[in-house]
Image (tube, rainbow, N blue to C red; front, side):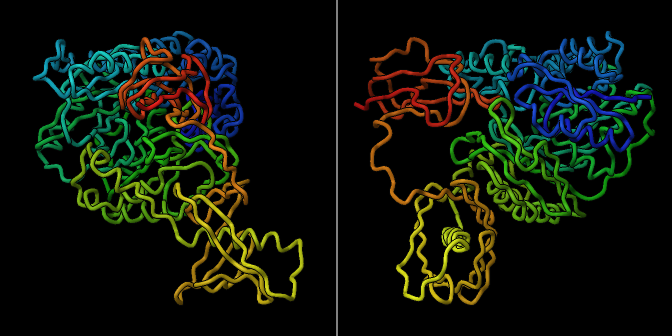
Amino acid sequence: MITTVLVANRGEIACRIFRTCRELGIRTVAVHSDADANALHPRVADAAVRLPGAAPAETYLRADLIVRAALASGADAVHPGYGFLSENADFARAVLDAGLLWIGPPPGAIEAMASKTRAKELLGIAPLREVTEADLPVLVKAAAGGGGRGMRVVRRLADLDAELTAARAEALAAFGDDEVFVEPYVEDGRHVEVQILADTHGTVWALGTRDCSLQRRHQKVVEEAPAPGLTRELTESLHETAVRAARSVGYAGAGTVEFLVADDTAHFLEMNTRLQVEHPVTEAVFGIDLVALQLQIAEGHALDTDPPPARGHAVEARLYAEDPSRDWAPQTGTLHRLDAPDGIRLDTGYTGGDEIGVHYDPMLAKAVAHAPTRAEAIRKLAGALERTTIHGPATNRDLLIRSLRHKEFTTARMDTGFYTRHLQELTEPAPDPHAPLAAALADAAGRSRFGAWRNVPSQPQTKRYTMAGEEHEAHYRHTREGLTAEGVRVVHARADEVVLEVDGVRRRFAVARYGDQVHVNATRLTALPRFPDPTPQHAPGSLLAPMPGTVVRVAEGLTEGAVVTAGQPLIWLEAMKMQHQISAPAAGTLTALHAKPGQQVEPGLLLAVVQPT
């Protein structure tokens, strides 16, 4: 029997695996980079081993260091989680060669299916070798890994070479493998997948379907089980193909077979030879623990002949530290607080006070709701997200709530083009108009503890904040009766709570302040100085780093004095395992170029200047 498991991963998935191991009485070992030295996953494990460095290539992608850590810590088994080395056959072999138990499929099965090109060939599907205008649009994909890295939609033949180059660079950085391939792009299909679980005795379970159509940058955002609206015949066909794929390679353990569904026709995408991020929705519907079953299969136990029956519906939303209104720009900083209400499952790798860094995926948590019906599960999850307390950098929480309540989603008419069509309306600012006043009153109440009331009429006080990108002013007075403001009745005001009566309705505002950052219920504000600096910070046409990251590429031949066109890609940044393109804001002349490949940048750093013509 397994006694000690090392998880060759980080963050949320490591913490989730540790939870099951603790319930089973199995000791746990974490590995961590220097950037993760104070992260949650090494704190909750029974033991932790340092991987020197910060970048994935020198830490979590180093199979030799992880095997050495397992042996040094006394682990007898290794669980790869997802991402990183989870679909690397050489890593699986290295674990087995070291005399350790591998909690995953056989290396041969990984080799056959982890490369999307080989998986397609195994099922008789050939990738495109020569792309013509008639083939457009096409999809460039990384042969290894997942999560949308190394994936590009190409609609113009002239863009193909550049997108192939960018995809190779992104795939190499994320997976250590720069192989990419091209396949037809199915417009506006639904992303549907089948969870499989196989033992070493010949039993293969097809655990229903999942719909993962709501995606950004080809990475899933909202997932649910079962996939709604599929015919019985299509569901059975998906199950049959998934089981056939597993049997064809002698599969064992958990895996996922993914499809694009359009016009009731399923197009095979790939088989992921690992646990998926969205596995909790399947666990909720079938009442199982997939990690516990992975451990049992690794120990040689047989599955029951048939899986347990499915019950109800489950929906999962991925909470990211990112700004969807700014091209999904990842956010960094201190996560001061993250608390979800009872009644939902929250899988996270963070707790209050943790730092969100630049080196890894910006996912903070997965929120999962289960209910008897799809409509009830959606309502439950949206309501819980609304009541979740998140203090720190910007997140996609509002986008998730609006997505769950969008008619196209509630009526199950969504597809992978959902955010392409609806992102603007889903990210329209809708801040609480009373949040600035509540912030100002809380600030005044906190400061009043250190002074005394004067028995004379006071002058109006003004506080300025930015909220949803716009500046707002709040006006109030100190009086003998306390704090007052026009148009509302101040019921009471404390440093952490303000209650206002607006049009006869009382509203409570929870207020928390961290430096200049203020959180009023779910609204984020930034307190502005009383006297703003009137000096312009940057010349017109300045290109500033929108996020912390690394300059991975500068357009070929780009030098100061070059003439550029509006929208021309100039600089590529990599942050949180994704590449972000910075383009010329207008046609003009490049008068300054400060960005250099390999350079580490912080938000607001001047990268280049384009002088408009």
